[in-house]
Length: 238
Image (cartoon, rainbow, N blue to C red; front, side, top):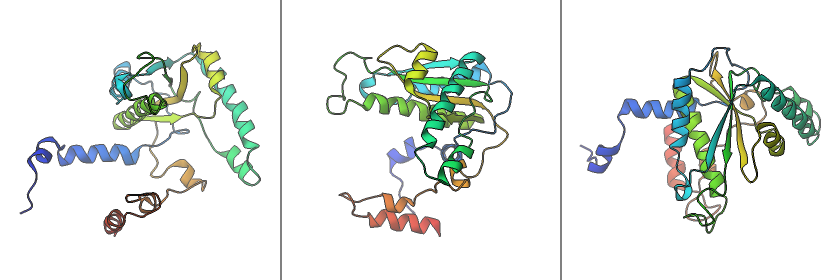
């Protein structure tokens, strides 16, 4: 009989709970085109925001704020800002990649029932935040953790989330009245969806494919493959 350490037995989630966690992780999608018109109930939105607010943060500074955007005019202005930036970004690609880029559905700003802007305040906690002396950007990393918490909680609730990154932060600041030095880190579209696809949109469209995990895990130093991890992953895929 395999011995299970007491700590692991005490703190691990049940098999059913673990399956739910991993299902949310593997089933999370960046939703752009499958939004339904059904409203997201306030109690569900509150649960998603609470999950985001329980993300880890450097020095417990909790640098995030959440702007819930229901106003149609504000969302239309963000959509216009997206179109301008999308058209500018298209010029970075050569054909036929440029045309493929322009054909992709990359946002659901007006289709989704709710939009949400997650901001990061780099001055929260004062000039000396525990843990930021070496890496100042950890406030941004912390806010990204809040976004991921919200995203996974949304998947558990059956709510789709799409991250619209093709917008200039200065335009979001102007539209939403965000003061300096607060950074509009993530602009999200939220709503119930007709389906969660089995694979990411960009993979289905042939834009990019998921990289093999074994090629990305190194052992002890950069570039040296961790053969134990690679072998374990290969056995799991058989």
